[in-house]
Image (cartoon, rainbow, N blue to C red):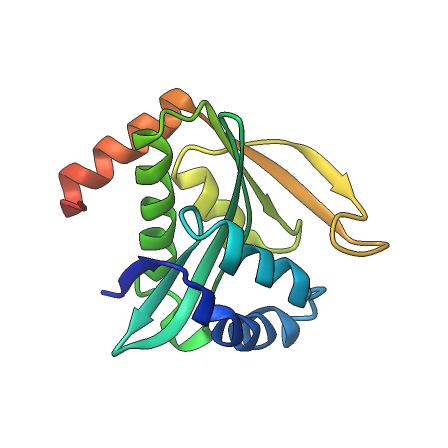
Length: 165
């Protein structure tokens, strides 16, 4: 299992490397250095990194606005896909959202990313529409919603099965 922790200011370069490795080679638009810097400076409580043997292997970026969360980026390097790192990152995010009494979390995923869509559906997220030109012109993303009951349900199941905390 991966070690999950909140991101820090000094994670900026590792995040850039992960972004390029995970999303760049898959043909996704990269989120850009400013976006990553904002996360490492202003959203450190809501963005998480997965590490294996102290090496970063994945991350989730979540922005908080009032009682709504937006998880706009989740990625794990190829060598660690299927190891549970993605679900651990989601669980860390949901645990934080439940603790802070959030109403909803929105996720985004490309229509062609069937694996990620199934992962989000397994945790209880519901597809609520699409968004055109989200990261770049011509880009399209599906919006998935995890409402308060679904956040709580996932949190309770994860706690029961894996004893996070």
